[in-house]
Length: 224
Image 1 (cartoon, rainbow, N blue to C red):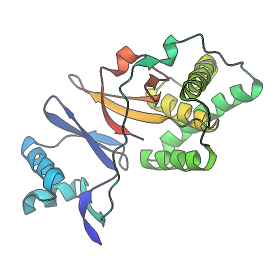
Image 2 (cartoon, one colour):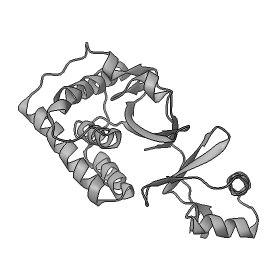
Image 3 (tube, rainbow, N blue to C red):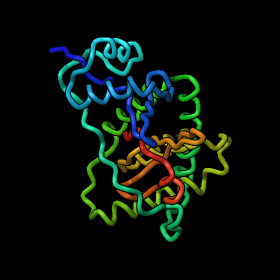
């Protein structure tokens, strides 16, 4: 059965009593006027609002007709630690590891130049399902492995001829870790005054490629 629902390509967050939207199918952040915000939140709460607002929300791609099933938001633990601040976790830099860092960054830069973000995320999710395994390690050992692999990635990163970019780096790190059977969360977040967008990779409550102080300045808008 088809019904009106929120477009799964579009996510949103509250920031200073306003809404900010991210559309991964169009690679854009945007806002709507406050009146339309109220009608959208009314729809989210009850599944209903006035016809004129529904039409406008559909024109903006925020609402679509789709199957009755909905995707539950991914829960994100509040960042409490940073891999960048835990240098004691070390992994030996092998030729294979170094190659994988180069390959993941160069490939991700190319994809983001030629593909929509939606397609990049879909490929990452597919590879996670294909390559990642369910670890039987204790949680503390899994966390140590994620931190050590991330630090190894960061040690090689300065030598890769790809300009630093939080989105490229975070996606590449997620792909690099997926290849090692480590499932992570990719976080898209925003701040205002002035507007800025940010991305990072996180494992449980550990930020893998940024500091906790920096990421806490942002409000997550999408977690994958």
